[in-house]
Image 1 (tube, helix red, strand yellow):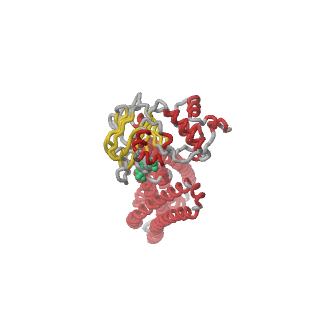
Image 2: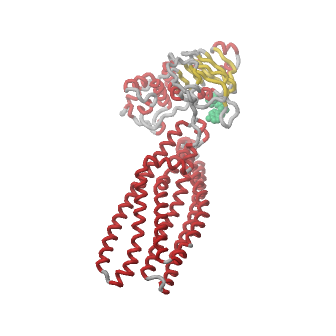
Image 3: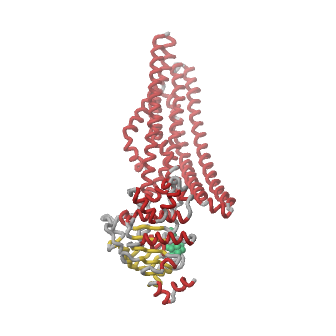
Length: 566
Ligand SMILES: Nc1ncnc2c1ncn2[C@@H]1O[C@H](COP(=O)(O)OP(=O)(O)OP(=O)(O)O)[C@@H](O)[C@H]1O
C-alpha cells in the first residue's frame, strides 16, 4: 500500500522536501532551549554574567521567531500538500469509476462508493504531511535529546530511555485493535451513507406509502450499527491514549525522582537536573506525535485501502488494437450470443439476429424475457459470455468503446436527467453543439415551445434528476439529446409509465422522426407502436420464440398473437 501511496507525493516533491526541512529545523530549535537554561543555571547565575544573559535572551527570541516561521510553513504548506494529494486521488478514482463495467454499479451501493471517495480520503491530508513530518520531528527530537543527555549523565539517561521500549511494545499491541476498529467504522459509515442516499432518493415514495416509520427504523438501524462501531474505535483509542499518557507520565516521574536523587548526591548539577526535566517534558511531545502518527496512519491508510479497493477493480477492457468505428451505416449482426448476470442463470441464450441498416426491429415478449438485457449488450454495457455482435462487420470487441457508444443512441425506459438546467441536459448529447443545433434538436423532440414558456428558457433549473418536470417533458428532453447526438443506431426501450394520450402521441411523433434513416431496435411494451416495424422479434427466456411482421405473427397465432389479443 505504501508503495502505491508514495507516487502521489511526486508532483509536490519540492514542497514536501521544504516541509521536512522545516520540521528538522523546528525540532533543532526545540533542542537548544534546555541547553541554554542549563548554562544560565550553572554558569550565568553563579558567575553573575549579565551580558551573557542578554545574549541568550536575544538568541532565544530569534530562535523562537524562526521556529514560528517553520511552524507556519508546516501548518499551511504541509496541509496544502496533503489536500492536493487527496484531490489527485479523488480525480483518479472518479476517472477509474467511469471506466468500470456496469456490473460494478449493479453490485455496489452508490452511497458506499461515495463514502469511499469523499469521507475515506479526508484523512489522507493529515496522513500525507503530518505522518512523515511528525515521525521525522519525533525521531530527530528523541535522538537529539538522547545524545545531549547521554553527554551529561549516562546511567540517568539510560534509566529514562528504558521506558521507551515498554511504551513501544504497548503501542504496537494496541495499534492492531485501533486499525480493525477504524476499518469497521468506515465500512459502517458507508452503509449509513447508502441508506441515507436511498431514503432521500425515495422520499416521495415514502410519503405516498406513509412508510416514514419504516424508513426511520431502517436509518436508525444502520445509524446505531455505525455508532456501535465508532464506540468500539473510541474504546480502542482510549486504551491507546491512556496507556501512552501513563508512560509519558512515568518518564517525568523517573526524571524528577531519579534526577532529584542524582542532584542530591551531587552527581549532576542543578542545571543538569533542570535540563533533564525540560528534555523529558519535551519527550512527551514527540511521543504524543508518534501516537498521533499511529492514529493518523491508521485512519489515513484505512481510507487509502478502501480507495485502492475501487482502483483495483478491473476496468472494462478494450482490445490492444482497438480502432475507431467510423462512417457507420448501421448493419447489426448478433451472432449466437449468450449472457448471464453475475448472480444469475443465463438471461440470453444462444441468440442470433441480423438487422439491416435503416430498418426497425421491435423486441416484444413477456416481462423478464431479456429484451432490455439484449439491448444493453450492443453498446457493451455488459460483456457477452460467448458469440459476437458486429456493426457493419466490425466486432464490438475490436473497436474503441467511445466510438462504439458514439454511434448508438439509447433512449432508456427510466429517463435519467442530471441535476442542472435544460441546456445542460440536452447538451450532454453533444457538448460541442451550437445553440442553433441544440434548439433544432429540442424542436424535433417537440420540447422547444414548452421551454420558451419558461422565464429562463433553456437555463431553467430542473431540480434534482428533473423533479420539476413532468414525465412527458423529461422524456422529450431525453429524446432531444439523442437528436443532438445524431447516431446512426437507436436503441429505444419504450417507457412503460403511462402518459396521457396527447403526450404519448406527441412523443411517438418525435420518436418516429428520430427513427428516420437510422437502424432502430425498439423494446416495445405497447404493441400498437410497432405494427409498422420491419420485423418483430418475440423473446422469451432469452431466446427468439417467433419472428416476422405484425400480420405474419398474428396469422401464426402464437405468443405475439396472444400478447396482442390481451
Ligand atoms: N442488472 C441486473 N443484474 C442481475 N440481473 C438482472 C439485471 N437486470 C436484469 N436482470 C434479470 O435479467 C432478466 C431479464 O431482464 P430484462 O430487463 O432484460 O427483461 P425484459 O424482457 O426487458 O423485461 P421487461 O419487459 O419487464 O422490461 C430478469 O430475470 C432480471 O431479473
